[in-house]
Length: 412
Image 1 (cartoon, one colour):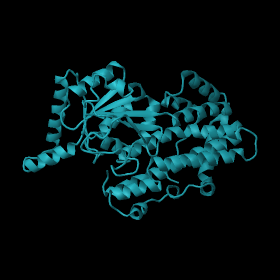
Image 2 (cartoon, one colour):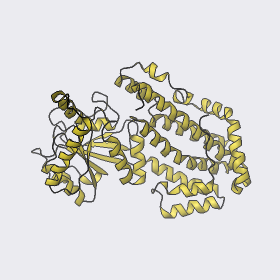
Image 3 (cartoon, one colour):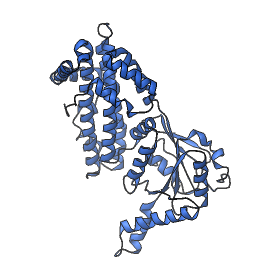
Image 4 (cartoon, helix red, strand yellow):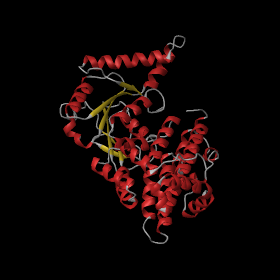
């Protein structure tokens, strides 16, 4: 098993509850009191509510801009799709979006990217635009321009701000600008200087329209991992509510090692919750219930890990097609059996094989945490679930890194 888990206790877990503000202050107090008082079933019930709320948290992202600015291509790219994939938003040189159109994420259906009609067209003027597209349903707006930001963008941004929502300016198609500049000025070409000139020009256009201190992110939907995408991701990560931040992060395309690491860290923060649920079920004196619950938790979590890291067959086939490599060549670097098959029999087999490591972790809990010493069944269940999830997550995350490096033949 890869990666020895740290010695997490219920007291440590209580300190981590603040990770997601989807839990109310009242619930936080109830969970802490239950953990500290040894009431595992009660704590498990509250934590299960939190996990379900986190899993069901929806995120609605609105993509807008002028006709032909690359809105639909961005809608596809942010969902990890190419323009010709099934479920992709239609793209074209003329406006193809006539009404707000939802595009659910193919792996995370609670995350929806909305392709909005182009602003500034005869049917959609910025003064009435927000009402026409049902403004209130979106969590935030991304305003896209492929050349200069104009008065339409600035007026729309002011209206969005006035109504209490966040917006972000994205300058698309910068790869095309770089290619054109390189052809014209091959000897004097400097990519960083060109990007800075584009950014300065966009910011000046927005300042001229009355937008104070505008932040502009330079992107290419064809090379999403380049330019300012990670800066945009980090900004959204800071500014989104925490439960929606988690949904956003899990839905991001696996285009860089940095994104894979962030996903791993976010999923690690959920492990103590799942282990506590397992512990609470173990306290119920029904023969076989605890093992059945542990296996169910592991199968569901491992399936989610596999999907979030893009190791399911559909995601691997799509990646292979994108980089024009045989999918077998990419799959060859996958080492964990969990990335290839997740079944009850496999989970039970791995539980048996991991027995030594689990017992060491359980012994730590029993000797250092009085609560677990008095709840033998709970301590075994907590320790088993925690150890297995931590180890499995490390294995799958390492496989995802190897797959990405193999696909692009570089440390992306």
